[in-house]
Image (cartoon, rainbow, N blue to C red; front, side, top):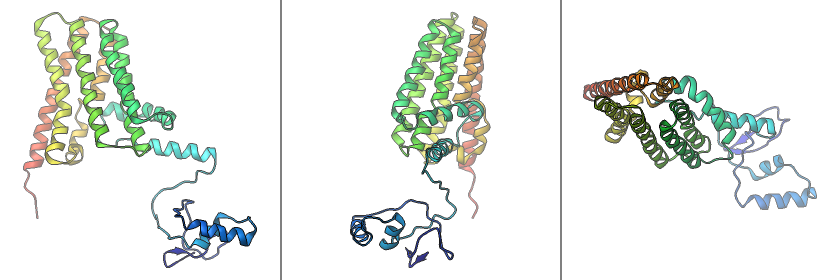
Amino acid sequence: KVKDKRVERIGKGLKDWDAVDTGFFVLDDGIFDVTEGLENERDGDYSLSEVVERAKLPVTFVDGLGWTDVDTPEELKRARKMLVFTAVKGTGDGFISRHLNRKISTRISYLLVERVTPNQMTVVTFALGVLSAFLTLVSLPLAGILYQLSSILDGVDGELARAQLRTSRLGGYVDSILDRYVDGSFLALLAYSALKEPLWYLVALLALLGSVMVSYSTERFKGAFCRDAYREVPALRKLPGKRDERVFLTMLFLLVPSSLSVRALFALLAVLTNLRVGVTVYLISRKVSRPKTI
């Protein structure tokens, strides 16, 4: 029961009530005066409900917002799962992330959310990505599989940050830079280990540049206009060629390694990435130059 935005009465037996408490109370030092008084009156035996009622705590209504009890191990497990599975990035994910990577990464995040920090996960993912690049000198199928695994784990640090309320602009900034280093080193070492003809080195260079520019074309928009390109131009979400899709394609082409499959991969990446960048610039320029209606 609420009066003047404060708790007037509280208990499960109320017939006339204004709110259901979430079990979350914010207390200051004044609560010790209340508990001391109740301890003297009740001879040390009193309930939390009596403390809240005596303290006349202020009430904050959270109508429409989700909450769940965490009084038992089962409820804590459910709450942890809810936090992780609602911590998905939402915008900017490619087809592979939406339909494959996130289904795996969220389950990994669920297992690690109370054990690993986002920064630790970023370091692990980066190390795994660099290792996959050097494995192109040893085994292309193994390199491709490890590259795909690093792509899956690349979503975990962000999920952990959102679930642990540790998101930061610096974290996203560093993660984006490390991704470019992983992609660049993987494609460069793949070209070094599998290509011989100068013409195909040029194709590989175009593929590498296009892969970097896919991310740069949207991040530069955010830097110039302080807005998310994927929110401003929803059509960008459907364009093929995002990092998760490129990494998955790379793995597929390397599972059956040959000079032909590697050349086909670089040719596809060169066309796909640079075409996506061109379409991105076109769509953004139309959005920005479109006159506003009053």
